[in-house]
Image (cartoon, rainbow, N blue to C red; front, side):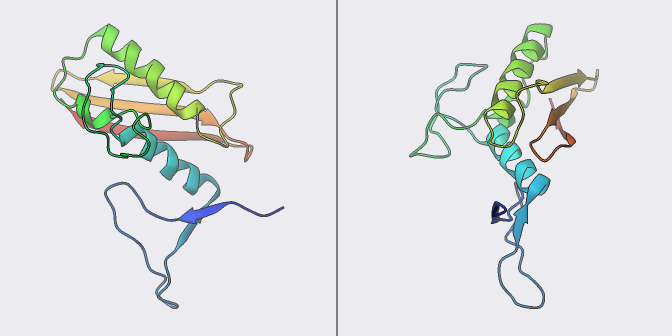
Length: 139
């Protein structure tokens, strides 16, 4: 069985070259899944699934792809907002290949009086491990 791999590119980062060969590096396993999930969470779709705002999508040929979490910076954090965002993140993570649907992903969202919002997502992968991804944004 061949192992899946993809060119390694962290969100907001740059291509990483192998210091010996000078070739692009590749990610596999959990690192590849982490990069794919973060890309889905942070990519702006045409219609935001939580706010329903319509904008120009980041991926013109796949306007439905992404959750656009970065667009929530500055939003008023209410219980409904956190519930809707949590459900959207769970659906996004479940749609990535390699993520088990049972047990389902779990998302915890916390906010502080200063406006800091922290998101932790826990999911199980077909790699047989429990994985955690964390994000934070300032409102």
